Image (cartoon, rainbow, N blue to C red; front, side):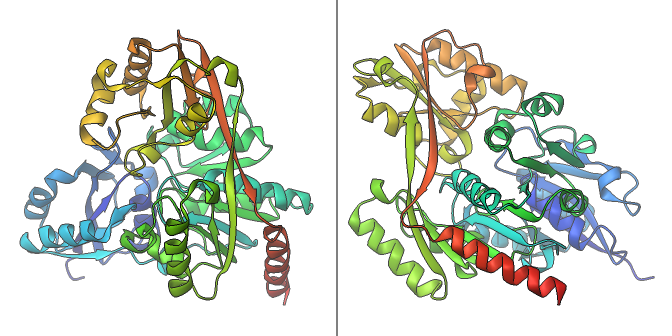
Length: 446
């Protein structure tokens, strides 16, 4: 047999593993010599384990920092790199291609169709053009609409493999206790806990073929709850893509979110009340041009604060969803909006009290100046987050994260909680779901 072609997969601990599982794990003509890791701290310097890598890789596959890419290419003789992570500008992909070419190899973005699994059940996918558009509340809204139609819903959540990968092959979350049993990070709890509290069963992990088959045993319909602006891991019968009117133009300039826009069946525009008319007009025009066949649904993210009187006239430290604020590029989120609407006298700058990895995050994301991103990918980072909150000179802490941090951290200051939900303008989504899933069921039985 001829020598196997050597490949490096560029990733961020999720999409890269799924791409490998779909395309390369069982292909004897290629050898994936390494994954590189970007965006997320503490996911490099380990191995993709043999239990996931398969029999062609009895030692597993090493995961190295992306900074070491050129060295890996030289040492391992790789001639192809596959770009397999999300929420980056197309210009970033081009820069990576230039790096790879200079090292004597070629770079290809991951192929979307070949990495979408086929389900025996109807599939609704909720994706976006950027991190922080509002996928999570929209996914919960759609799950509620499906349950109202008498359907059993299994939520497949985009991977967040921050722990022991060998223990995360297939994960099932049906209760808050399951979060503790799987030793979830804050980022994982932010996505899983609201679904679980709403009565949804969530499946996640590292091997989505096995995850999908497990979910199909419990569901009438699969709901893909996407991460960042990644494409679906399961071929959808209905693709709902969120755009963000607070970030007009991003729907065309970020990888791979533009694919989500151009292939959408429904384009959903949230945050309408918070956007300017000019920004809304720009987003609507881009949607009309690049997704002309999509149904457009608009709505708002309604904010609820549990004790607004505790914020009025006080100096507030605002804690926001981490990924939205960091690589999502947002300078604020629901917490800041709620604090201002509740009449906070001052929004306290969190940077002077930042320690450890939280201080490093502020240095890496200089656009973040008024809010504290709730980063908690591991124990050290969670400790740094707690210490940063304690050091803040504030009267009240406004928790704007999807998970109630008061359950995870020991916060000394008084706290209030902000939650948010999607409110549709009009009543179209329910009927769209009914029609599309009925058609999908008819095709399956034909």
